[in-house]
Image (cartoon, rainbow, N blue to C red; front, side, top):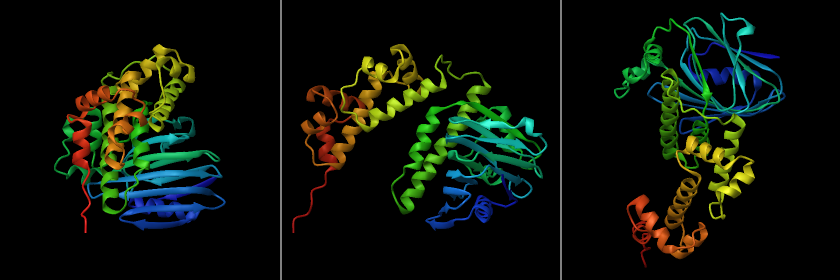
Length: 345
């Protein structure tokens, strides 16, 4: 077992103290820092970005080759942690708790944790487990100075956590699994732009992810979470199938075919899509195809008929009808507006 002691005053300081133990090099570009490590203790990356509104992003994409205990002193830096495991799992306890009180942050679970000032957080990372962990950290005093942060809209329990700027109390919330968060965090991890635009896109997604954590806490606190008969494994299968449709929207999908592929009943498949995407299976397929069509028109030289064929529709008139209903403009009008003719010299 390897123990890493952290008493830093920032997210950057935290990562640098982890680096001292596991090795690796940190590179910075446009305020985005990435620790890349390939050592006897770990392989992968840890990236972090600190924004000027009291929020930082910390993402692990790493495998440890020994059990890791992260012992964090909350005396100097004690943010609210909004955590989510996209892959793998980790564990946590407060310093005043015994090891029998350790709780697991499971895959796809939303967790909110903060310690009292002067206390300790213990994080446990298992060896030989591929970890993809997203952590959004809020420094309360700085965050509350931001003019648009109307925290009194939160439920009273979380409201008190945000206003506890002297860090007198501990708080922990282990929510139910949330695959919508997985989709949004997946989008965050696949931002492909560069420079200032990249940082702006990441910042916007961080705000969305943070709001989803808070909304889930609010719904569970008020017992408004949608009930479902589906198991976690079944919801994971629904998400896997939804991602397959995104990758290849042109296939001839049907409810019967998708039910066969997933091993779920048609009723369960419909329930899963409605729960995760607020759409029936048919509505979801149509939505993905229209999104793909919009991108083809915007980024390729295909004509409308070619686009219709490429995304799996057979009727151009039907495609034009639903495209205009969704976007408020016909495909031809959209094509004429997005294409800028080249100057001829």
